[in-house]
Image 1 (cartoon, rainbow, N blue to C red):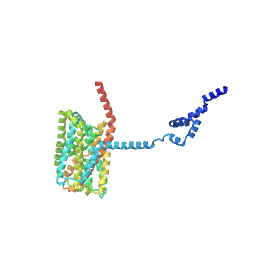
Image 2: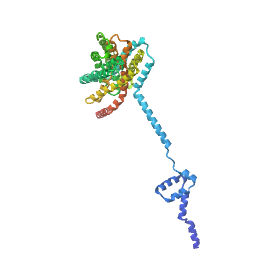
Image 3: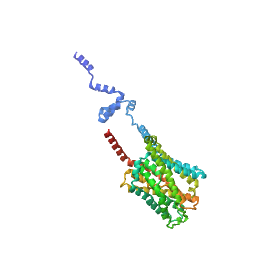
Image 4: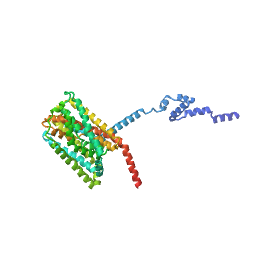
Length: 444
């Protein structure tokens, strides 16, 4: 009986080793990797037996999945591609004017207006486009801000002295160096450089660029008006001073008979394309302030000034290609003019920025940096045709080439600099916006 009870208890209570073996045999297949990994970490011996006891097919099936390297690489490529596409979209949206100007120059190099209609085209574009730019400024600039900027006579002297004296002196130094070798450059190109250095600040591109760079556009308008007003008085004097040195390149000129035609043309252009549109714009803004803000800011018609500037660039290069001026000059001279133009623009901008940053607000610094190096092609062209007589049309076109190339680069460089100026002034704008919001919250 005892033996029988012993057998019954033996059969009723299996051994611990048997239960362990049964447990190992009944581990679900999907839990094997988990158990294997944990036991490997803990370095427990029985797990090695369990791994070795599994069948080959089960071992292959139970190994942990490999890291998805291919998926991560694909995601990285997609991320980089998305960043590139986002950057391209931003550049096209932010620098659309530069891209459009390149297209305009390319079109003007292939197709030109007939020579018989060049004068009509130049007159219409010069007056109409500049009028559009200053009408838009009149509709969008506060009258009180304009008047306040007119009273800043120290700032006017600072800008105009640099624009006329510093720029013309630097240009004369470069021309004198180039003139040491008479075979290096065409004399008409050297004279054209002096016209560029002695010209006033432009009326169109610097106003548009200052607004895009978030600078003081009202100050730029005021400086443009003052510079254009001083042009008939200062530019001929400076040119005569630099060309009376007896240099070999100045002997090709025959002086005209007085400056009456210069005064008539300059002041007529100032009145019709600057003062009158500006006054009309200010009146429209005073009568319909809400409608004006909605049209130009909400409907984005502020870009009309940029489109008008594109037409000025187009007519300039159309005239240059139509006259064959570029074909009459050595390619090496054109390349040299391009490099010197870039160097002069950056030198003048650096001098102005360095001198202005110590005593002017950032918005005014931006306005000065666009006013000082920019030159008015609309003033250079009439001056070259009025101050000196008996000039062959081809030679006159040569004399205008430095101004044409300079205008293209000043617009292109000015457009690129808007990116840096906006980043530079952004903290100040955010601070002003926060202060306004705080004052508005306190008022409520």
